[in-house]
Image (tube, rainbow, N blue to C red; front, side, top):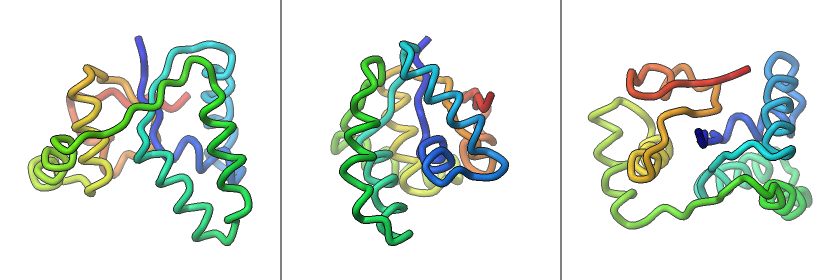
Length: 133
């Protein structure tokens, strides 16, 4: 089954997070070795925004190139409908806008398992299975 890769997996790895970095790195290594996964262009934008906010603008291009080089990681664009459904998801599911858009995209494609540690938003949704191991 293809799993969606949430932004925090990339960020924890990039920042060598003391508690979550190794688990995130292990997830990305499995994908690098051929596990099927999917992420969105919005996630890639979020990764770039975080790097920019950290003053690491010079790392953005190489980071995106690295992420996009994983042969079994499909990067999916969001569409106009995903934006509107995402806005609706904000109130219906009590998530932030970006999670709402990614949720709309996952629903459209049929993804129900997510590599993420986002217990605050995605973790409370009964129809999604968060995997962080």
